[in-house]
Length: 81
Image (cartoon, helix red, strand yellow):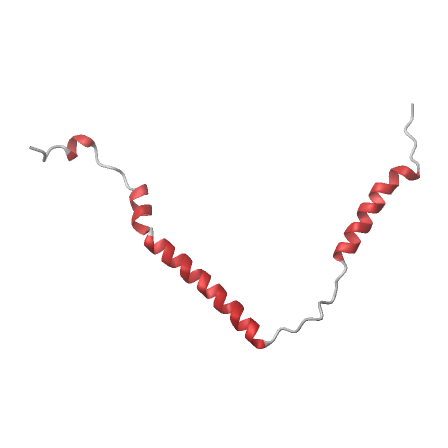
């Protein structure tokens, strides 16, 4: 039996193509961004990097200890009396 290609088989592809075309069409926002908005964005990005640096600095010793080898127990117990 041969599969016939009718108008019903093109309908989902056409609908999908139409949906993609509608999503890619630009829409004007009719919005005004003043110069202060750029400063706010830059300060937010700088603040994000500063807080990440502070978090890494705060947990640096934990990160360093995680990757460091731990001494064997026999060496640690030598000084116990």
